[in-house]
Length: 201
Length: 88
Image (cartoon, rainbow over all chains, first blue to last red):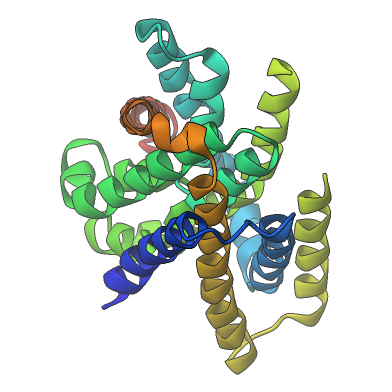
């Protein structure tokens, strides 16, 4: 049931938007941006109030940040190699497309609002794929790619959507790691997109 | 950037007020709803953009390449962290 709620309804909402535009409804000027500000505010409220996170960070003496840092650097490295292999794709497109770490709604709207709806659509689809592949392949990843596998794959989603999969296949002792990694990455998304925009502007 | 401002504002208020129980549940429900509204707006943006619709095959192709390369790179980093840090 949750899988439907988390994956099918977002797709339907997106499709309904395309349909509405096709029927001639004009997009609301800056409407997406207003909703987005409200959305990240809510994310902040929810994350800021989570108890015990500071303790966990202290216990791991900061080593816990290696995991989200690894996702950021690993994703960027993969994207750079992909851009070098596929001549049709620029470095900017590859890095911005990857910088959602699975957080498709946030990354896609940020890129779209900055005036690149085509790349926004790429980001939307690629980050949805990242989430879906993680959900579908978590068992395989935990087995063959170390227990960190599903956490690395889940990226920003490993704090909520893919957390149950991590807990089940990597083991519940990895759930706190997964949560903190996803949290750091969720907060990192707007910063990384701003950074890549700055580099390639 | 204004988005980052709202994110930090939420973090600070959340940290001060520590919402939990029913309040947190309501926040999560509204969050889910906000994501749907956001995607609806995105659909409108994209649906009214002829460039996106014309380039759909290129968009989906690039999305696959980016998703797969992101995952492989992340696995590589995960492997390094596992071997060098976690196992010790």
